[in-house]
Length: 179
Image (cartoon, rainbow, N blue to C red; front, side):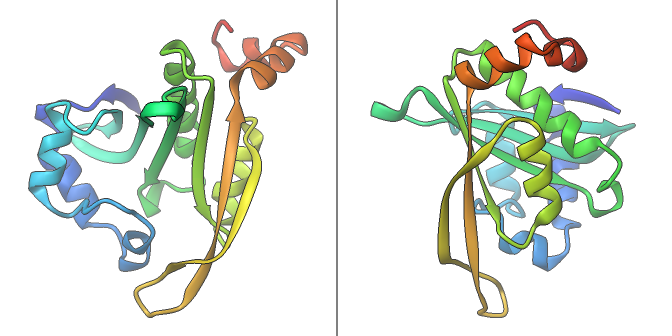
């Protein structure tokens, strides 16, 4: 599986990817990802985020983005990750999250945050395994398409603290990256 930066050549495949997601998955994505104009705008670099897709041939199997916040939070990046339901549990989400983490660190971000619906145990485990820790639990923060309220967890990765500890125990070698 190749992870490549999102470009205009991938925008139609990314639209198909998002349009093929189950309704339940779309509930928890903030952007209007099924709108081709929104996705195509990302491919031209608008929106202030770095975005990558995992390609299986010409088809998108996963997507990850890091959006740098602005103003007094310009040192913080927000991670967005979506993996095809048929690829979950294969390690693709971890590959994409790790790719985004390394790129964000390379871009000088000092902190990354990700929002995860509390019931998404696999996503919580993925991010905590990569050094993210809980920062907030927002009760009844998200309303799903059936109108049910869901708790939202905010996880954070403090780059300096986490990566220094990982380098000390040799995990940077396991990630295959210099820290």
